[in-house]
Image (cartoon, rainbow, N blue to C red):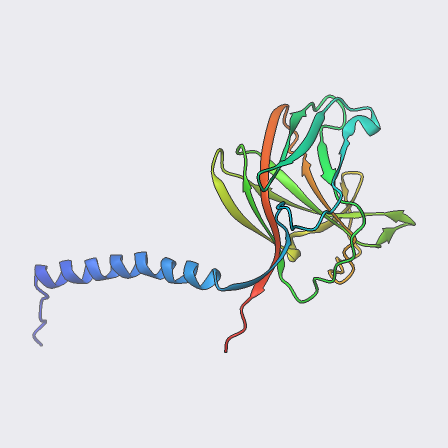
Length: 206
């Protein structure tokens, strides 16, 4: 039996083809992932809904962190300094909302931050042993870069006073509050510029 040997030119061309295909496929995947329907919830412009944001830092439990926010030029600027000798967090939260996002997959935020990890909060009327609970999901930021970050609802977990709970599950049809936390257990200054908040889901094919 005669075995045909492939020429070096054929092998080189085949290798190049595989490399090009491996580079091209992720681009296709990224393009497909961008085909999402979005619902704008906040954009911090003059015509954007006023969610009545307010500050809540760890000084409510004896902590020493500082933080606050300002809205300017279409951005909410959340900044301060965390101190882990105490609660170790700074947060801003909305006044009471009434949102049914059960038709959506998650929350999308557009931010420019400092490379620290932040936490997005959702609240419903859910309780654990009679106490109001929150749902948290962490997200990482890139220092000094504007980034669009998707936070799936499946990433949110129930918690009470920083302790993770086993349940109840998040009911996205009954969202009554948003919150943004700096609670990465690190000391020092922080700054995050929030440009928009959206709900997202996969686009329906025509």
